[in-house]
Amino acid sequence: MVQMDEKSIKIGWRAPSNIALIKYWGKRANQLPENGSLSITLENSSTTTYLSIRKKEKADGEIGMKYYFHGVQNQKFGKKIDQLLNLLQSEMPFLYDYKLVFHSENNFPHSAGIASSASSMAAVALCLVSMEQIVTRRKLVKAEFFQRASVIARLGSGSASRSIFGGIVTWGTIASIEGSSDLYATPFPLHELSRLKHAGDIILIVNAREKKVSSSLGHAMMAAHPYREGRKNQANSNLNELTKAISEDNYHLIAKIAENEALSLHALLMTSSSGTILLQPNTLQIIEEIKKFRESTGLDIFFTIDAGPNVHLIYFENQREMVHQFVRDKLVCYCENGQWIDDKIGSGPKLLTPEIEF
Ligand code: DP6
Image (cartoon, rainbow, N blue to C red; front, side):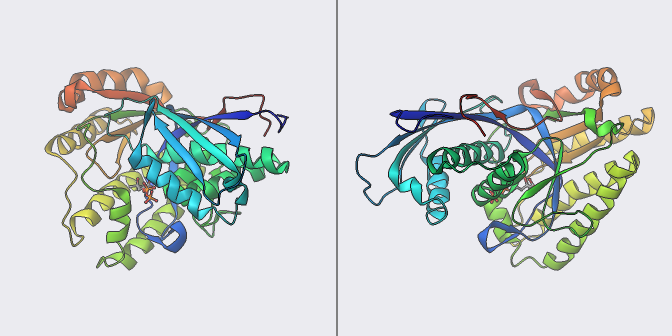
């Protein structure tokens, strides 16, 4: 264990991004979701964060924090971390006694249009819970450690709660999932032979610019949405069906539900008071090509889309060669500067400073 008399302590975590198959869309107070969600944790798209802590000579009643992104102080994300730290005031009172400096880097292209708040907030939350263990000298067992990190990550960004775990992850109280909660995410067990264990995700970058609507605004628009109640029912019923389909290896149904969720998310955006359209002509071309390819080959590949124009193409490991050829032949032409990312299901966060026990 790190000695507390060391002047400065460094804690490092790498946390992955995730892509939701059942979309979290709409929230209540305290970052509680209106509906349950389910995601695939990614392997390659991740954020690395180092937190350096140094005890203040004298507590000054303030939380002192600096946040650097790729070496440059970042106001926008720094503000989000400030908000998170303020929320944690009573839960983590020791935050007042230290100077905190975060250094974060994403390993996916800066302008790839991939939402980074899930991986960034997850990495920050893991660093904070590690810090808590060190300064309070209270050691949590692993399951408690990750559950607590998921709660903290959720307070920073809802989807980040799921990035604390590898594989398939759900978030939200779901009757059929034991131990599930609105407060934290829960890993969803896959049986030994599940093909999802080797799922691939090709991220087709239709547009790399930052999206026009932030997720937070999107969630807020759901509060007065005419389809609000219908959406809650749809998402929860899709989630129940999807978990059943995953357990029963019904890949045809998995594809159907995931695509229904992606299109429903965008239908909700379009039918909100702001009439937001994030899909672009090339997004629709890609969807058409995927459907045609699926029909002609009989492969059970499918697409999903986040709150933006980029398309995730999910496939299974034995299809890799065929699917990659298809992407090169038919889809790259719809991607901005031919950009796409080769990712897959991942095993979850990694501690980068092994001298810190957890
Ligand atoms: C469409 O987690 O980014 O990606 O809680 O306001 O930070 P905040 O929102 P965020 O919303 C993600 C929305 C989504 C669907 C999903 O990931 O479940």
